Image 1: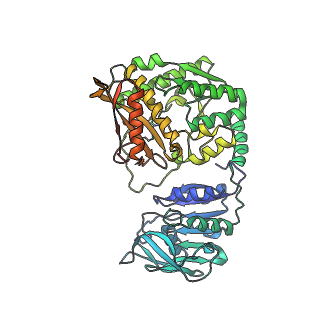
Image 2: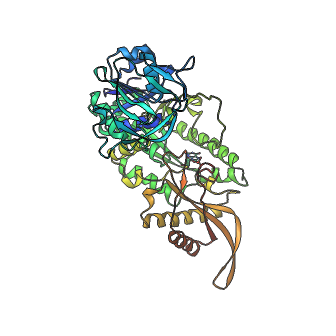
Image 3: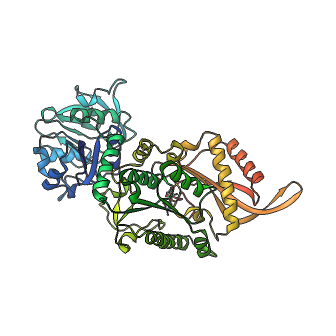
Length: 519
Ligand code: XMP
């Protein structure tokens, strides 16, 4: 597990909804951290992980219950700085000799203001405007602090909002400094990592060196194959691996005929011209489009595309004589083992498209050099590797491509119209300087024709829907609030410039209840 020479902070997770945000705040401060569930942390783990400090997250449990989740007691004997947040505070107090009680009118949810009781190194940037705004979300509360601790801040319902044992560098707070609603939470974490002696050695430059060494060590003189989609993650992974092992890497770009206007050419030339990266441009449009002929069910479309993708990829992999490793752009949020207190399998909303199953079938191992990174870190690494900013800032594009933006039957005619309409829409967004404010924007061509009038004639053409959303991670999303002027101008351009569309609508559904894509 220990891959690096950089300083490491361990976040022990008790299942809070916002544990990932703690990691985000720390990574922004150039501190490397990992989240591990409380029940995966024992003495051997601690020894191997070798943290420089520990944070105990919040969580939905109550320490007053039997079998409440706890960290191993050893953490308090290691001489390490520890910060307990919300449930983390309660479990700390409970284990170190204080007392925690159930609710009874002292629960606090939402905004609260902490008043300073005494100076503390973690709050030196606070209180300039009076009591400091924080975000509380707790039912239980600490009723007696542990020996050695002292109170440094209080809120109306939390007499122990901020407590600390300065000598041991143990800090315990009732609120969540990691959320947006604690406006100066970042300063709080910055002071904690400073107090813990972190030098801020987690930078993308350092990561690049380390990742290259790790790839070389893992791969040796073997061959790696990578499915390049043109998206940021697979592109950054490919360039990084190429830098590490050169021509031992071959990339395959599968053109399924469901790409946007000029997309395939742009992606292929970017990699061939700038990186001289061995790249197979698999022209498989016919294979995919004929298999999709007459299919309108969204899940069937996805399954056909996913299945064919694997088949095609395997074909090209065999053509170059196979490979021992498959490269994937897996990110950290995909691998965090979160603690589930509710358990149970979740329903499949959509079958996402990837090359799952292939490594086993072809007896390949995985190379996943982005496994430790968040999306914005991947972008920063891309910049570090010299990928053009325009490429790195591209909106996400789904594996099944335009197939899932063409509800109902997919025809070549509809795909042609859709490509052109999408290009006009994105051009509009760029011209108005909105591209970077939007997480993702696209056109969906609808399976209905509507009547219109252009010039003196009647038209009977397709309707389309514009979609634009803001999001942090694609899990939830809001529709983008374009002005009426923008929408009107864009509709006029699409109808005037694209033959085949005579009506434009704007999709104002958020996620949930909608999804970002239409299928
Ligand atoms: P939904 O439509 O589920 O999309 O709200 C969330 C994000 O995921 C993208 N998406 C996919 N990406 N393969 C991918 O690589 C897929 O099969 C796939 N389906 C949706 C979608 O574009 C959005 O960014």
